[in-house]
Length: 479
Image 1 (cartoon, rainbow, N blue to C red):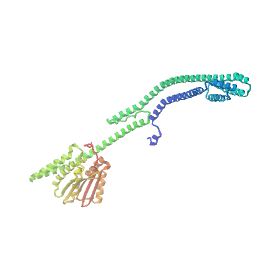
Image 2 (cartoon, rainbow, N blue to C red; image 1 turned 90 degrees about the horizontal axis):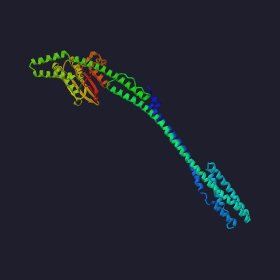
Image 3 (cartoon, rainbow, N blue to C red; image 1 turned 90 degrees about the vertical axis):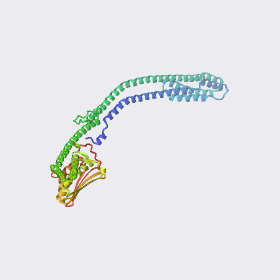
Image 4 (tube, helix red, strand yellow; image 1 turned 135 degrees about the horizontal axis):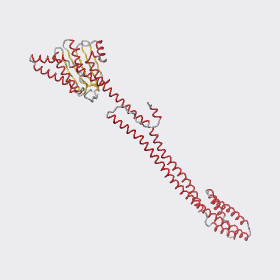
């Protein structure tokens, strides 16, 4: 048998299969998405870098050559004292910044040329500044300055061209890889989805088919088929355990039904024996003799009452074939019995029946009280001689019903009382009436009932029966 720790230590098989199915579906998709994301991110970073360079180079002074040439001409002719070094430094700074983010070789070469030309341009400006002759200055201006500014401007335009080409190449690569990735995703999905769907259908069948089989089995059990069956075959340990549990339940139920049937048979045997014992020919003969005697002496009213009591006695005795009757029915049966017996034992017996009306609808086995009353007459009042009294009471105590038959008869000493209790509880047939009453109650109520005997010598005996007040007895017959 699996312990709770074993069940906690192992994952449910169905859950494991579901987890694997989910992983088989989402790992490829997740991998594809990660790959696409990384590739797009890389290309976008490259694209952003190139486009940033183009934006930066667009900030280059488009009139760089004209402005530098003009400022140097004015300086050479003496119309201005300023050399346009700031323009050259701005061009150099821009070139250095572009060089950091440029990856293609043509663009880097163009920027390196711009940096080299900026250095030369600064050198030539210093040379002009240090030259005193007007003619030499003009010659250096025309020979060096004009040519270098033209080259710087050309290389900047070339750089823009190369970066634009790089951007177009990246865009082309993005389009290409995006197409490849889309095709790849479609191919993967065409492979993964059928495989996952096939496994999902198989997993669904592995769960639903055993459940359907178990449901059919439960329906069969409900219809009375408790014959042994092989548990449902399934890969899932919990479903297998459930199916085995259903079969185990069916086996236990079948065994319990058989035990109940055997107990009901025992109960019926006791009932039949009790009925046979109660249908005492001497009791009937004596009653009929008493009726005849009453008629002979002219006491027709008493004879009529006795016939009525005898009729009520047997009507209650038979109870329309029911084994379970109400307290009210049992009360009427006892009253009829005592009315008949009082005619025979009028000199030694009085009786009183005091049963709470609130418990009269409670059900109990028939012939529960008569053996007790009969015991009180034949073993209590009759041996003592003299007038005696029998009192039958019934009341509710908490959730229980207590029925008691007391007499003021001969009673018993402690040893006799203990022997009687032993015979009753050991189901000794020498005390058949009391034993049968006790045994029937135990079979119906188990440990929820009690059968108590109290007695004092020369004072009388009291027998009380306690049964559950809320006990449910569904069937009107015991078998």
